Image (cartoon, rainbow over all chains, first blue to last red; front, side):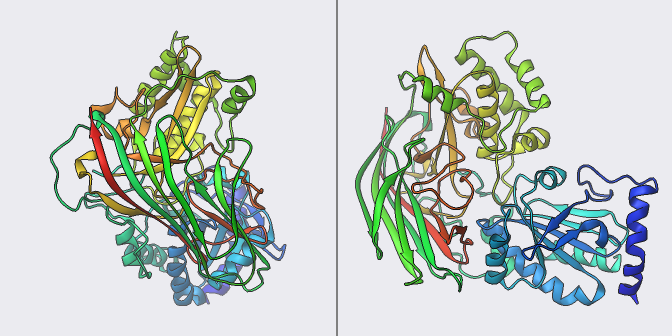
Length: 169
Length: 356
């Protein structure tokens, strides 16, 4: 029921965000709608953040040589297993990747069960102010950013953030 | 107190604690002790003139992607400079290797190319570093070198905000050393050293200016961008931090081997003086050494490469490297993933220290 509602509401919410007085943010800020993007995965399929708004979303910025980042993959996998059936959507963004081969290798290495996008995109990096990775952005069903972690994230903080966007707690 | 870009020693969450909490495996390569074996009498870091350090730099490739056809590894080797001697260099590798240099900055490296077997192998370089207290290095610059040291690579750019900051800081100064000193003072006043920042920076000067915080690469990326934009050549020097001399001559330890764990500093060129060394981030962390770190460097460090946005020899398939502190490995022109596919470990031991 929840996911069906989310599917129904997503385009409406996105439309409201874009047209209904809540302007698209230029820079990611807590409490505001996220900067939108459209990026390809390793299959060449385009993924638009706008199409997902209305679901709880985690955006995860990483790259191939980032040690810390690979640790967080474990958190993401556990969250995906626990909350995936409740609509949680995880998008990982490889800020080095400008070609599919980067992503294929990463996905293979970690057995990623969620989408990884080619994140080497100037507007994306500026919109989310990416200098250091990892960066983790939690977006609620209300289409707004609830939390941004741009340094260490503890398991307790991660779990609380996921519950906040999935359950509204 | 350890000298490090991202090391914590005072109770905040360090990467070791982070990994433990995250439930991940071996910690042996991470955040190793930079602590002394025994307490030593306090030594003024500015009075230390020479340190000798034994180094083992080891990279272990331990798995390859299933479809990998050909593997390439580049490991940086330390340069000999007026403030750094390199002795007794040996390289051991279980695969054929060669020492090469890239043409732009002259960085030396061990290069290994292999088919997909064996999927596990190790490369280790051992050497002894004699590091002197760095001071002004008399040198002239050719037009080609000047051009190279004025280039703004990667995301190192001067935005209107940075330009306004620079104008205010520099005021009416004209002489290169005077300009560099004013920017040094203003930058240290403006930025806050933030050891909480985890992960790997890109030297995005717009981000640094806006966030007003950073680690060594952030301080020096912004410093470099401003000076180069004013026509002052700047040399980026990438290396590793060692304990401050108060740790004593028996200090030893190991450093994390991904894109963190290294240290960097710069030298700017004044035609009237030569290369002038500067360490903005250490000056911010150690206010008592503020004047010292403009024109001098403590010897508790060693340099491993020069420059940013580096193309290796032979050229890597991926993008130019933001810096070249750690070994870099590709399979079929795609960067391998750290630490899933390979790990670096830099062990050091300080064997001798001399004071003025």
